[in-house]
Image (cartoon, helix red, strand yellow):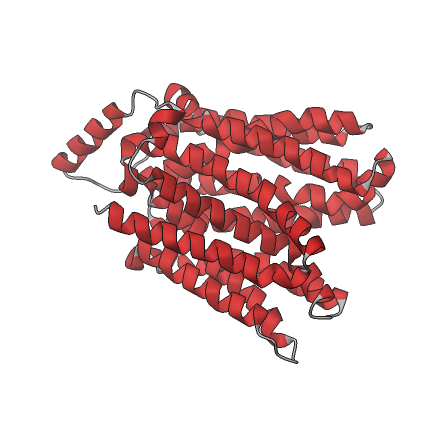
Length: 397
């Protein structure tokens, strides 16, 4: 039962990753057919991000009221409906309309699944969970590419992903009884009693203000914001940095920029083998140090190109354990009864970081120069390290 539910959760996280890279791969064709400027993709992504922030902040109340399984099933259904809506949209305003349920569904399922795995599964399982998110982000561009090169159009690409989401929705509704019965380990009577008391304490949801008043929460929010700002800035601007500053061929730069994402996915798969042995705090610390090593390689003023190219892959590997381990450590740091509320706020901070910080770098690079890339990443790395180390000293459990 444990293995079956875990497989379903992994599949749900693949579905969470599927739409994330779909718009970017289809937009070069979409904006021409819709007759809008290429920059208008940012409007759609901002609406999606706003929806994810709102649903993340309400995830605590939703999950306590309906359970993680039901919230996940309905959230995936919402994203499936939104993707189908994208596939039948002939006007830009229709995309904006469907972006609302898209974002609301994505934020709710993200927060609900992350908290459920943090409470009931190991750090290894959390690392592999986010590895499967990466699998989803890799698969969807291939689906869109197949649709575009086969003459089926971007609409059919969205429709195919929508049908995949609908199939998963059916599986999730059928699996609802498993969510109540599955447990990670066989526990002693004393451990079981402790868990029952913790679960009884979860009956009342926290307001945003109450959650923010928990000791150490602000530190983890700074760390999470910094991580997501670093990751998304690297993902968005790495190729431009390599071409404009390092004078690397655009095709080579694009290939190695994509290796950053592959580095994250592969790194999460590999970190799953050692996460339980080293623990969340050590994995976070190790990941940040590897990120710093990658940033140094990217910034080194060498005549050869390979240090910068390899540095991007190293940054990806360093990023790999940080996100899942921060999430998995949340119940330990702030209590099982508070974890859903805190994780919901963490998700909201993540989306704020990914939405605002990469465009801010674009503004700074236009004013000062794209050579700031490595320093910008280094700044968020320092903030992340300072916040996590301070939290480790503050919350000793």
